[in-house]
Length: 339
Image (cartoon, rainbow, N blue to C red; front, side, top):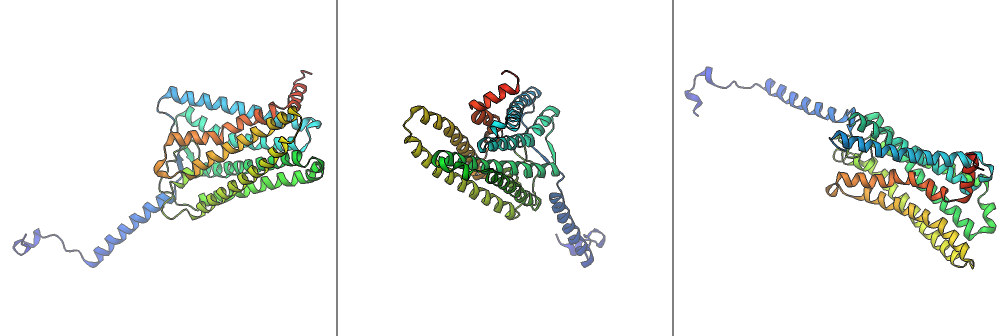
């Protein structure tokens, strides 16, 4: 178009330098406003189990049963060990602390998911999400470490029976458990610090609670160095614990095979094998969840794997470690006045 033939009143207004500068400032302010919105996320949207009310109620009932079973079993273990002086031994002291950890772990994640299903909501506040990260990481990290300590206790009892009372004395047991809880708390604080330092580009968490692997997928580019360091530390801790457990179990099984009594071998294997199965299940499910890339992630499969390591062990641990134990059964019978 030849603007020379157009009247001055029909020509587009010529922008002055001041107008262009004002436009650039507005564009910059819009970008800053968008970034502030990303950094000031006030709540998150958790995984939606179903849009249908019937399925949401089913989800609520299933989680209610799992939660009641886990809470009841672990509370019974804590009660019998605390009130029966005959169970004040290192093995049962560790079992009581494992029950406390399992009780805390399920209480951090399941009730919120049950409430969301019942009220047909997906929301969790930013503070609530951070608290879930702190507590779940603390209990989960402590769980791994305590299982390793329990395995060491079995190693000393089987391979060094004459030195058991000297090595696993009261002071040593208290120090080991205190170290487990303190390390777990520091581990949880490390994950929490990574979460607080992150800039989120989305508020949709594809999990039924605020889980670290899912939160990592929401981080803006190059904004997750602190949390990635925490994940690397997590992997190293689990790897070291797993290698230690496998190495000591090789020595345990070698010692067990030298036992002449068939009944003695059977009793020892029945005590050790469930522990190895639980520990291995935790390691492999954690590895699958943490090492999977975002490109091969399926939301429902993530939920299944997460339930495997976060909900099932706290429910089964009382059965695996305690209810099959004759001393625990006798203590429970006395607690309820059967004997």
